[in-house]
Length: 293
RNA sequence: GCAGAGAUGGCGGAGUGGACAAUCGCGGCUGACUGUAAAUCAGUUGCCAUUACGGCUACGAAGGUUCGAAUCCUUCUCUCUGCA
Image 1 (cartoon, rainbow, N blue to C red):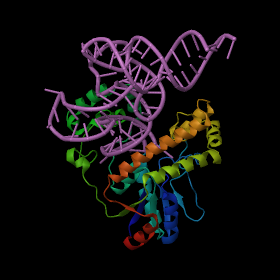
Image 2: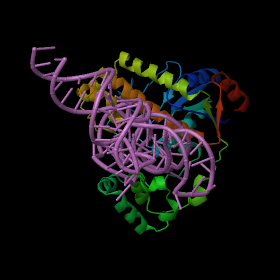
Image 3: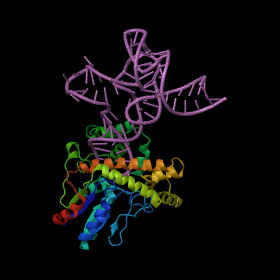
Image 4: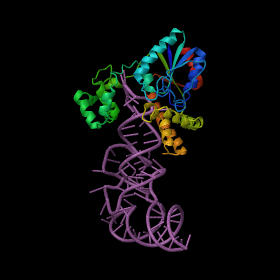
């Protein structure tokens, strides 16, 4: 039995689809979403809970904590085993591409994050970071592409890893290798970008109606701050600006929409790069899964 | 009605005689991304051509000065502010 992975852009209807599939094939849902892991942040992360279908990996940490691809991979593997032991089918659904990729292709992800080191390196310029990295291993010069070289977060991460191995980095052409897997069926809903953007705008309006502002105030009231990782995501970031009177409601909506649309484009690029992800029409996915599982 | 300020590429906003097809930001498009990923970063962005230090049209409109104007002058149109 294969495991099912549903990926795709935000607001493209993944959750509903996953629910229907779960009902139909006796499955349980595992959320692959870097925001829905947060407790208290429901409206802005479009969290959904179902009474009859179990959803894993939501509400597992507080807004001041961090989750990661590595933790996701490990947690999910355990949960998959449990689900399969019950004779059910795991359905992994979410828009955090790094998470699903780490799981499906079993990326080794290298060393643990060293937050002290990260903090220390944060203040440096990208030129300084490059020098540090090249002094660790000059080969990085060849491996890094132009995007990496200018990306401080990634430079820091490479320094943290410190070494280049095929396993934890992938080098040269290896980097763009096509991944392979036999355990998972990966699907994405076929929906054009304009349609999703329409849905995003609706969803944003809805979030405001449902009380995004109140939810944000409440979380701040619990003692969490706007610097916390949970609150620095789209929706809450802007809601805090609104609460602080830096923007009005129209600006709030516009900003959330714009950030979400930008996110969507990045997601589509990411998923589009994986040849193993099948793009299928919404109403054909269930049948496809039934016949290919 | 008088006085002042201004009209620049999809938007915001630089530029104040040549190196301006026009800094920059946003947006758009393409892309990168193996432990922060709703994060972070790269390329590209007038039209045509794409071999080229190439051609064309452009800085509210119309004229003018000049070898040369987004930049100076004249008139017109519109916008904003102060006085009436």
